[in-house]
Length: 479
Image (cartoon, rainbow, N blue to C red):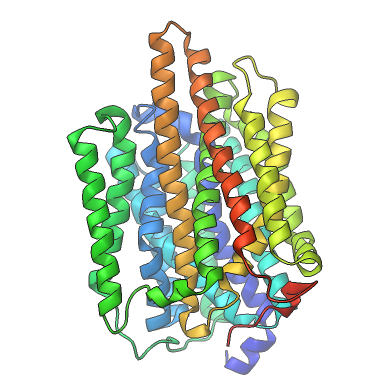
């Protein structure tokens, strides 16, 4: 396909890119529903179970910058296909896993493939659609896929886990991966990287990936080893030292993995901080809410999937078009701040859910609030993060914002799951029965997540609107 014909088929190409993203999103939410089944089958403890999620998010976030930069250097289609192939093969390994080590290792490889796919897909979309109104619509489709994938994931996870077993939640990725690879070969034209004259910053990539991985490993292990133990403090100190090494490397090399000048753009700096906080709350909500419903309320996998459905359907509705219209009408800051505050209210609702909770009283209202808030905030956050970035750095900027999301989610989940486990252990020592002990631990995690979302909402007012009313329409296209 020539470049000219590709330009005429941008929307079809968008569908293919979003189908690849769908596979990544599907895998994130489908796992949450099956966690108790995986725990029982492979003998995970409550704390070690976090690694089924964190192994994926850790490598996803750790390699996101590298994945985005590889696309800039070596061509977006080539690296998109490579990421898809790696993710699909790793999904097969997850589906065949018969031990904790094999599953966690395969999840880490999945994260690497998913990092490349997600970073490059977003940069391709931003470069395909440079006119502000069309870009807002395209990002709405992208957001719809993310939210719709969540809906499909929780339902499909419930169906497959109940009807078959948890292995099939990974095997379902195989036909999707093969189909997307075939369509990409047909639809996406080959091309050189937009920054093909640069070189890859391998020292920086190694330093930042090791730093992020050590940080999450330290946090996850802190509940068992102690937050002030020599092991925990040593790991955190090493992670911080590696982060400093990374910053020094980026300041010195000719072609850095993450040019520090990128953060001189207020949109990039603010939205990435917001992304860390918001993802910390969002991923913890998915993980801990699933455990609350299954371990405390006794829901089966199918009922858990149905409980998540209202939030995901509302997010899908907003992303399909409503969010784009809101952004065009009110700009970026107001939808961001209002959406995040509504999401914080949903987390607070969960923070008061009792051990004898009921679906309509204690689950559905919080799900509706979280769906409304996330649906309203997701599109403007991505638009703000990418609005001032040039095409030659679009893969990088996409990698940066996705790294913020995934590392915020990974670190946030590690911290909140550790807080919940610690509070639960204390409650059991104080004589509470297990359901009540789990409940007080989960309530603490939800409350801290609400604080994260509230702080992110306040930070949205640090963003500058590109223009007056309908500011999204006036956002400068990347060029």
